[in-house]
Amino acid sequence: MADFTGIRPENVFRFFEEISKVPRGSGNTAGMTEYLENFCFTHNLDGGADDAGNVLLYKDATPGYEDAPTVILQAHVDMVCVKEQGSSHDFGKDAIELVLEGDVLRANGTTLGADDGIGVACILAILDDDTLAHPALECVFTVDEEIGMLGADVLDMEALEGRRLINLDSEDEGVLVAGCAGGIRVDSDIPIGRAVIRGMPVMVEISGLRGGHSGVSIHEARLNAIKALARYFRELDKVVAFSLCDISGGDKDNAIPVTAKSHFVVEEEDLDKVREFTQKFEARIKAEYTASDDAFRVILESGTPHKIPVMDPKSQDKVLNFLLLMPCGVAVLRDGQVMTSSNLGIVRTGVDRQTGIGHFVTTSLVRSVMKTQRDALADKICAHTEFLGGTALLKEEFEPWELTESSVLRETMQKVYKELYGKEMKVEVSHGGLECGVFARRIEGLDAVSIGPDIQNMHTAKETVSVSSVARTYDFLCKVLAELR
Image (cartoon, rainbow, N blue to C red; front, side, top):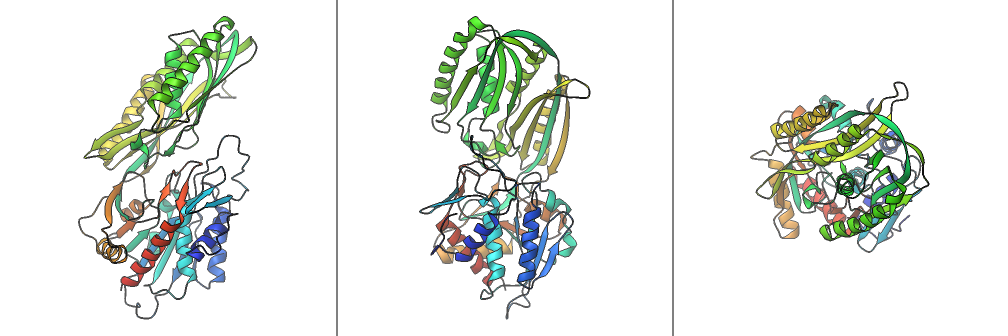
């Protein structure tokens, strides 16, 4: 693990190091619930866990703040689990290996979990420090935010007295997030027919892409590996005949896919043409995406001719047309701000063992600051699926968090930031989803904001956080709490 000796804020990084040893991928957060319950016990705090694994911890106001309005501090404990190709890391049991390089903290070949582990660590550091001045605190640690804000959705909001909420799940220092997009997941399932042919088996894999958060990075035009693979086959079809066996790509609906792979069959005499085409395709895509994905690679491997199950021609056309025409990326842009987008995050093919029917399934995440636009784009994906004979299912919906005209919390934080750092704090609406929207929808009159330090490349194995930015953000948060009388 990294050596944090002399690194401030000491408590924040001590707690971040501790929780980095606890498996906490989305859907596997029981260890974090236990950790927080132990923290509650050892610090003599009121609170505990609910049936979902969310944890609420309460701390009394310090002297002089007894009459100040209660403040809710909130972060989510789960992280997106992505690792580099070839990594043997097991997110179910292995600690995240932290690497400190100057001002940059990263992980060794995996996501770092600064999203939202740094937020969790900041709250724990505040609860651990009895020298800080603050109002009564209600500290909320939610589970499974990254897969649909599932913990926040079932949280008992009646257990909260506070009407001021500071969420610690943002990634740009000096930015006060005061609204965010809503979202909905679209699962598409198209039946595919199979056949058996004899030919040369070939494997093609797209890799080396930058990826990123499907909300925060969607406007940066980073290449989607699934869409790149669909283009590969569309252009290959003009060179040689081929039959698809399968296609797969992506792991998370909220991460831009960095890899995609397919097995296909060609005539043995066409293999050299496939190799030549692949080299030219790789060079062409690299030239097009030099700014965002200059490490783009196409790996090609071949076997020996034999009989192989493949998609029938009609099904193959459905699959490739679906991928080529599927909305992906920024859909609506207004005044330089992303209003609506979609991310084709996961694709798989397989055969139902009970029925023997082949299936082509995909998952897209649609985001928008306007519910009507979100629903219209999701409906477009559904229509696209149904036109090709498939079915679509909408799930894990979360509402937009709308920017309010006035906010005492926002004004106080802007004032404190300028006093500390001599510059204005920006107020923005994020295209990424935040749990503030869930809280605002269910707590009438809630005044909510979100802040965080500089985190780069979230939802990828290249995720980093700035150590000095964490220190400034933590100092700012402590100063804000002292101002909220």
